[in-house]
Image (cartoon, rainbow, N blue to C red; front, side):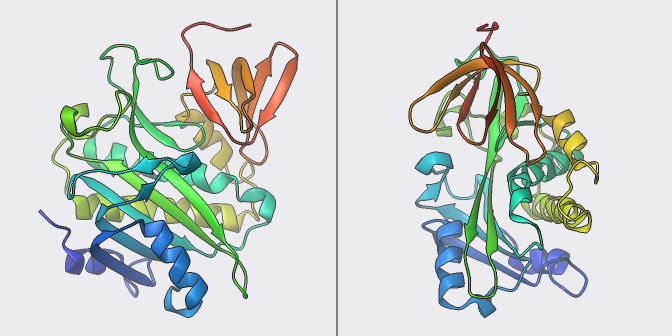
Length: 281
């Protein structure tokens, strides 16, 4: 069943909802790519906060340029347009807060005990065997943020994808799963979209109100509590091909991951973080 655009607008559009603009399309290459192009061409057409949802993305993007695709109607995929008044040093919290918003929405609307995997994965423990780098955790969805410089200040695009009804043969990799395979109650995509958008925007508003101080707003603690990476042995594939083995200790003031390695602590700003079965130290 396709998304009910009229119902979504009744739930999410101003004056009763939080969004200034909402569009639903059947298919695009990538909601984030389309929005970035449209913002650069005519920023006024996308006031913030805005949301573009697609039934299917033919060239959806994951982290590090990876492709992200799913059969039409089996996922919730879209991109939020934000213009948060935040210092640049606080922008690293946005993918984490978006992930926390997704976790909050999934727990409240589906009954699935979702969690975060740093920096931008939404996961669930399905206890169905070990997958290298993931253990028993499986990926339900992901977050991809992008800053678009504009003449009147940057926009931030928050791309969100959540697997809803995929069968095992429709999943792209062994580390993936869907809500249907994770024991979710009946999932209405419109209700989930409304819960997700409301949760994400509420968390971002708290960060803005605190001047970007995630710890002072209590957000750093909430993210840490939902993050399964912390306290675990990890293997990190860093940009440039370097490797770091250690234990993920905490998040720093900017949301970066602090890993205790053999030569002391190291701050990880980006990289593929894999969970390992035993400490590498």
